[in-house]
Figure (cartoon, rainbow, N blue to C red):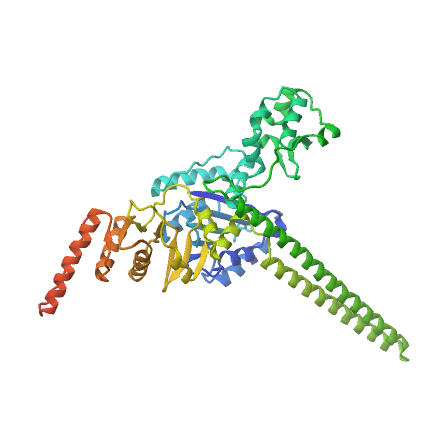
Length: 541
């Protein structure tokens, strides 16, 4: 499992209410939220608990750091735990980080391939009103992850605690965006040559051949690409730190402007999709074109909004000036004119406030509906709109084997199945590795192209719908993988609903045939007037 604390960019942006609103918003997905739990509040009511936590935070006026800790616990794909186990794990992490007795919301999200828990913890203690900031939290979190993996039999993950922070951030960004970072590109394209440079002039030539330049910044060096992007040199490799480079090459000698302008840019960094098994050049070119067009449209629209706002403000100013001139020409007492001036000024302020508020609303609305999309988000958007190539690219990103409950085709099939009927269903979402979530009747289906993913505690009615979808996709001969309880349940559901299906696993197929014989015998006895209570055989596979 993976556990991490999500930092905020600035303290002023910390908003507990906004965080809870995001975590509890279903986003139009029927199975996004599995559980919402409130801890250490006087009530379990979410609205009242949220008010209580906000009041507790406001009572501490001395703290200048963020008053909210946003902890995320994520489990490997296919590994599902019961809600009681998830609650116990969440409590252990909170206690391990020193948040015993602190108020918190815990929200279990099940809308991605990885089951995960968001824990929004109030750092302000409800009784002492003091703030708690855990020190070396990444070490405590890593140790807890290792303990829980052993206790619950989860997949072991490398919890590296000494890895460079920039490398960790780069890896997270690449995983989230699917685009190669400048740091990774330098490691792949130029690092070997950089290490072999014997002096500053040779190093500048090597960097110039790759469209890079090295500059001093703060107490270290940065490598700057032609497009202005920069990365800390020591993050690329420790041998490129300022201390190591000056020790090896001598005092830093910057490149002169004439040499820099004449350098060859045969190689240069351009954001590109991470290397995978597919050629994504055409799709990525289309993505860049659409994003460029969208950016120009946003700029033009914002210019129009600003012009409209400024015109309305100018008109309001002219009207206010006209009102003041009229009041000035009125023959009335001094106090009466003063009251009229005050009324006119208040009307002017109200008009300006309305104009600015309308502008902000229009700006935010357009920004929300026409925001820049990342590469993977664009692929998911295209796939949801029926772009089969985009869906294939997303699915090519999947790594490792899925270990959860699943229904698929027989093992010797080539894995190319019929996806056309999905278009007739309501697609709720598509994940960044191509898992399609859609509706089949009243049941939510999760389909990654090679299998139908079945969540724990799925009802028998839902299993019937899943088997029917599987028969449409894969035919009547199916492979059932997962826990023994799940496999037995699938066989029982198939027999009880008289589905014409067979199983790839010989033992499971024998079990199904045995159930079928008992079911047929029971029906025959019932038809003959013989009352009997057939027992469902339960045996280990």
